[in-house]
Image (cartoon, rainbow, N blue to C red; front, top):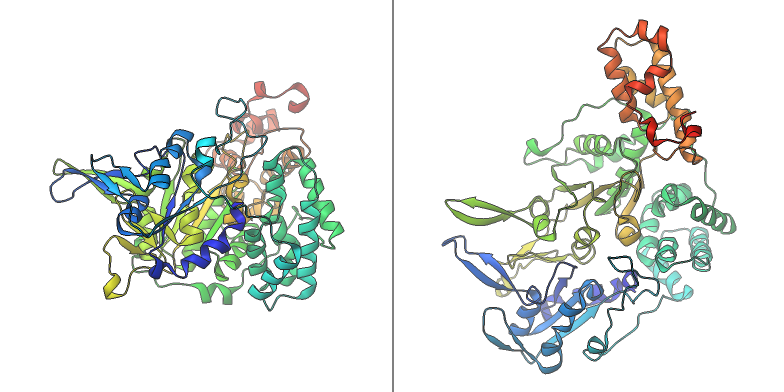
Length: 548
């Protein structure tokens, strides 16, 4: 299974230069031709040329290539590899025929077929391991690590971790594995994989008292269905792990200034450092502190999840400003493709040329890549970053390769290899899956790749302070009324009375409108009803009891 293959890949990556190892991250958009060669543009002449993929490069020059994500390919694309896998030659799209080098080897990695998988049209999906594919390879099943070996791995990786914490984690891992659920996807979301345990241990080493909160963030407990959340909480109790209930009335958190100072950078391009309007408040400071702690222990990929309008962008931009970090920003959408995420086509002097995307620039110069609205893009688009995050390798459409190891020795110098800067990080912002944001379930697909963080609804004191900063001429009692109403709406959403999670974005819109109008007479005449009008609630979408 995918989360147990990392150790295997890391072992080979240590010997990459000797074995000429290449990683080819596969995704659903690849067809049979894209597996062998891709079309690129010559910057000097503007002519289109063919460029080898990592698979063809390995077959031409020798060495090993890892095909990561075989289960993502369509069956016809995967079957097209039979010629090179079984007979050692391939017919290339440029019309030539290539006989594979004697030292050419292929390692394929993929998820096992899920028994309850569905196809795009809602029917039952067929297994990607067809009879033709089954005969192409020698198959090895990678099972879950036994509890004893898993404990040994954690103790060796994190020797300063208290034995009592390790025992609690092992008990919780067993409890979650024993949970019986309806689908493999639900089972996977509840499982503590080796990747998730590494994220947890890395942070708990710094803050042993925050084990419960870190586990809640890692499992994204606030966004699980109520019955799943209840199961997880019972597993916590059986494992001796306590969770402190969140107080939405007040928050007195203050950021660790020493930690902030130790992580601050010197920006080579100050224009790329965000400069955002921000009202200091304890609620959002707590979220920034949570992200800062993960960043300080070396987490290179963060998933910051919260309902729309709760201030994810504000929190991230403010923290980057405090850290003096340069930011590269990409807003994803439903039409985003792997190609558009990795390269930017431009027309210069009548020729199409490909320039580095924000992702490539961030990797080259050690900046923070902020991927906004990641849940809107197809899951396979974001999933292609797994190779970059976990393995330090990513092949670009123009033939270049982002590599954590680089190519520094004179005899191995390769202009197509782009060294990944050690300060490069990916911060991904996403909304919960499903209604009302209609996003993809990014967390269920690849949450274990990220260190996960939750942006909770605002506590009442912080909420009042922010609204007061936007409505300086609005009466305090009016702001108090708005905050109380929004707190009632939050509780109603948690109880399932209403489906839409009203956020601080809507309350700010109300205050802005009030501050620009003579609102006293309207308030005296219509009272609370005017708040609903200003925030543009769509009563037609609610049942009668929901409106009440």
